[in-house]
Image (cartoon, rainbow, N blue to C red; front, side):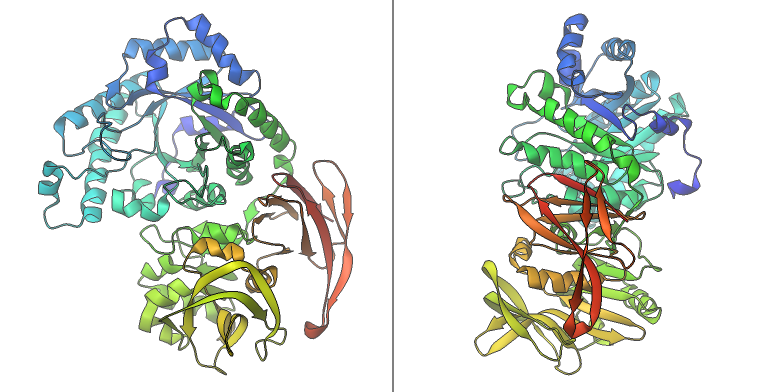
Length: 591
């Protein structure tokens, strides 16, 4: 792993920060670089960014759409930015020039012509810079006749994984290191990690090849985006990719596209990127702010957001949350971790099974680990709570019989009415209404062997939303995920509370609020609450024993707690209530 190597000295430059607690970078695509004729005029246009944002770094791209910039122009642009006091790195985007095909098109890694221009781009970057980054097109989706021939009997996933790693070694790392042995080569990953192996990405294997990585945090408009990206994903990707190894994930990268419908949606990408406590945020791209009137208000707003975050990020500890195992090769229930994050469950996704965690979350993707049964058993023997999804149960099939006879049936239920248990599953009560009718799968289970903690009503019947049962010194819980995962947001607060209660060993704070309220926890009694709801809402926070109030780190206000008693559970605890305005960060320290 890259963590066992001595990292290049250039990586330590991340200590250089344009703000107290982080650095801001701007990515400059090749078209805007080649088009610079009057450098003094360009400096003036760049002030549309620097008048509002402290820019400490730029990436200067030399290849995109198979257009290779002249080296002398790259050097001139590099000198211009460094005269402005801005550090520089190189950039490469390996997308094809043919714009007539559907969607994004990678270069063909079976083409000698494409590989030749890639190598020339790499060699130029190594000559001019001590660091360069690959934009997130270093994947493969080519199905030309040559690729079909080279694939042979392999699956597309097997072929692309093998081919990309060979190209990375022979056409990227080898020529780059031959010219500049200390050059830091960064691969930026996109945010659609659920489909990586199909296009040749491998977060684990690639870190054996590249020096460091970078993270795409673009979520834009979840409803209309073709990539199906819930907003919490801006945080999930930062933490998941960072789990490849300490210090290897250098920062997050977002853009303004599809965000003009709501400026807050753009700022949220920046907030969640930096809430992860990684050292740099990159804005794509320079021309969006210097020449595109559609984004004219974005730089001033983003500058205000950066200044706001800089005032409190140093007060926050290290992020903590429910350890959510997602193997790099796992697939299924795409982005369910982020949908649950939008329901107020702080997630700490990881690429390796968290053997020492007290609360572990396993979605369908985790069932692709052939050792998952033995890993779960070990955790449960040590007293862990392991929470799985209905999709995990479906993919496990007979393997789940080790724990309980719970099956994913072919039957569905259309529901809007729900109930919960106050007496550890012995009985169900209440009738709570979701925002609209949704479709959920029916789980088959054996009564009096496992216990229903929350359910959905049918006619003279009910169907489990949360099942819990003991195993060794731990507990296993199953959450029913709706057919449309976004319908998790339509579970009522009482059902969401039953789900949140499953993670009590990790959560120093328990949130009670509708879906759309996010909770970020840190290991020094600090937290952030943020609402994506379109209206003001009150959130209740159950705080740990010994804590009596919260201090707002933004305005210094105190929020005092109120003692509460849950009679059925004979539990006494303190609660604080926070009135949440949409899009505002409430940054609190518990005292």
